[in-house]
Amino acid sequence: MKTGLFFGSFNPIHIGHLVIANYMAGFTGLKEVWLVVSPHNPLKNKAGLSNMYDRLEMAKLATENADHIKVSDIEFGLPQPSYTIDTLAYLQEKYPGREFVLIMGADNLASLKKWKNYETLLKNYEIFVYPRPGVDVKDWENHPSITITDTPQMDISSTFIRKALKDGRNVQYFVPDNVLSFMDNKNMYR
Image (cartoon, rainbow, N blue to C red):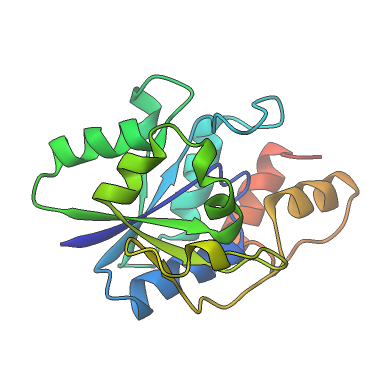
């Protein structure tokens, strides 16, 4: 079973994430997509991250009606910061019948050479890449492991949502209603 792994902080999850996950599950031949909530991305500052269990819960709320999108906390029990190559090794061992495919944005692909054991990733895994505004990935277009997809682009980010909430702005429609309620109840990002 071909399973896409979409790693992220999801701080918070928003419609851009959901559009990407849904596109990958519905238009690329993947059977399902797992949103892998990362406790700490080694290339990002941990200071701005909200509680990993709150981020996990928001991802679950956002996908509760999506049969083809699952949420995973697999990295919560692994050493931090989480390195994709280590998580993949663990998942291959735990789910030997699955074929895992990485899902990443063009911005991550552009910095792939900074990743731990990136050559092994390229050798052993397919990578489905979604476009990001203003990011050029021409150097990777002909790589046999890389598939550049036509995922619809939305110039929206978790940073934008957090800033908007901090500024007291309405983020309805940027995040699912049940996620918005969860954030309001916990007074998150205010």
